[in-house]
Length: 144
Length: 130
Image (cartoon, rainbow over the protein chains, first blue to last red):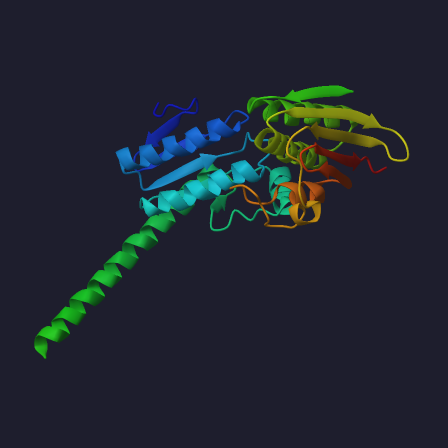
């Protein structure tokens, strides 16, 4: 178990798994954000799955924390996928006017895991292609 | 009637949990329970952030609509321009500016009474539709 907020952060190979099982008060949500980012940095996790299936509501504060955490993680070269949002929570979030812009979501842990794997493969092949393109450019420059 | 005193940050959680319980007992469905607890969370947080302390009073409504009424009162700095505060995206703090207009969309009725330096009262209602 990693982290100092009372919410455990588990490491599984390249990923971190966080399951929020309690009603988050504001300070706890901020602490969790900090813990996740510290764990990404320490473990160099490539992705994080955050399970919110037990969360009975997401208000503007928790929504902002989740969206910010996802953006911050991506600056640390890690991808966050939020999984398991209850339908009533999804309806309420949209009515409240929150879009969770740019945060990736999946129905459950299984699909979230697939999504993370897929994203990492795409990222790797993009890096490879851009690497090859650079090498070709270098070749052409050399032959001129 | 249930009264939740908002004095510290964790009272925001107590307010929304108490409102959700009341909604559940009155027969509101899960989506409406979630709307109510989310709106209460936003408004209780406003009290905590802007006034420091205040009360949330949760009451059952019978006429003309069966449902729930929640009254939030504080003696904080008040809202200078209620109309402006109701605009989406406007916020006087670092929050997202969804609090008041967002809460209004989740309810069937919302009224705000506020005077600078005297405090704020926000009333929300959610009706049980037969």
